Amino acid sequence: MTTSQSVETRRYAPPRARVSDVTAFDSRADADAIRREHIKHEASVRSIGALYFISGAVLLLVGVGAVLSVGLGRGAFGVLEVAALVIYTAFGVLSIVVGRGIRALQPWARTTCIVLSVIGLIGIPVGTLVSGYILYLLLTAKGKRLFEPDYPAIIAATPHIKYRTSVIVWIFVGLLVLLILALVLATLGRSPAGA
Image: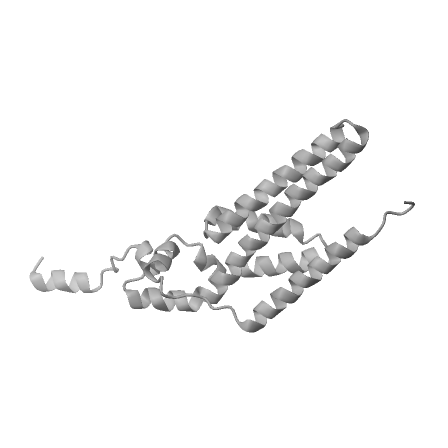
């Protein structure tokens, strides 16, 4: 084979790039561009983790509170109380672990959250809406990108890029918290029937 033939053969050879090189970023500018494109979606996905933390804490408190209120009234814990405590505790701990994984953008947490959200679609209407939104966040192209192996390196390369929550969102969150507190206080203020 002559030199001209080997050059001609190499010209038509397939490229030698590895598949992992396709999604990798080459420079800080690339990392900045990727992070800026995904930062809003990243903040929304991380808020799912906060939602799981809150629901896990509520499940743990409700489980312990229900068992204690029933058990203390009778003076002993029955099989149902122990089963409720175990179930509430298990789901509470699972929620907290999944929330931590989602906030850390762990792929296993994304898969677990998708499964739990599909189950949550049964809770019409609020569970359906919340679970549907969570599925949207996790299953879109941007949601998938956040859980790829190179995304933590992109986050580490771009500590200067921060998501800023708008004032309107903070106002709505404050109103939601006030509404929840009002509902809790109204529920606690009611006297039980027959008392």
